[in-house]
Image 1 (cartoon, rainbow, N blue to C red):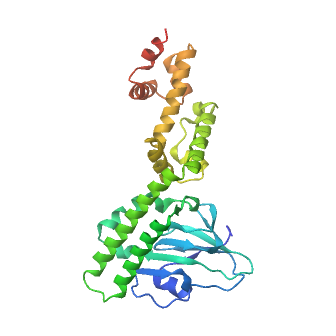
Image 2: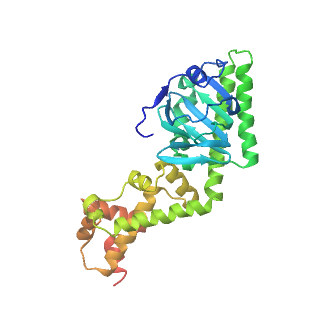
Image 3: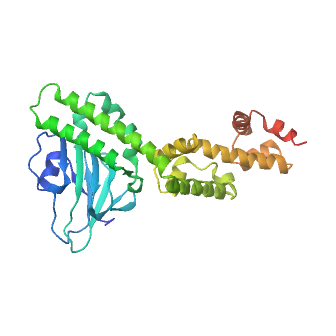
Length: 306
């Protein structure tokens, strides 16, 4: 499927046509009951790219979706978000009719034109999530999300007037805020999987700092750490902020300071030599970071062991 040329769907009207749905009530917004979409058995894998935002709540979806280089079986209620231009793939189970239930909200960027939401929508980190980072909803949360989607659908089914866009934008902002709240809850309640990520983060940083990678390449980047963990940088940052109060960059710096303290306390290397071993081109930069983290200069820290 990775070699399949993606099918680009540029408009919401095109999406309705491809899926065999009636023409949308509004060309830039649509709320779709997924029970109304059916496909024949044996449908081939398909790669898709939308030129609009997709917010989906899927249940009983007998296919696999690949998104963000991850595969997921939708065997329970799950919500996930796709930005314009992101590729995702659908692989139906063989010899079965592709079915799904749930809701799909489509919003074209043109609908947000000249509104505050147009500038901030991509700041919602979950639009960068790979699918295994999708939002798992409780029954109560699912009811809340569906209620907002149905309110949007009711609004655009009504007679369009000068207030329609403002009302739908307000409801969309409400839905995104609820999703942000539920993600924060998920970071806390899904502690087992989250702690596995923390354990793997520790292993990645320990391996980097105990190898010659530090001297040759410098500090690992946030992008490198996130890719190694198979999560997006935004997701990792949100998770770490919720569980530890620190960003990924702060965790990397803490590991650096830990390694620096070890070298200052058990070796006779000069501060400059330690700085170079830790990947710093300029010892002053190392000393400045060390003092900002410990309130002591490297030499003051070393003398405290004398």
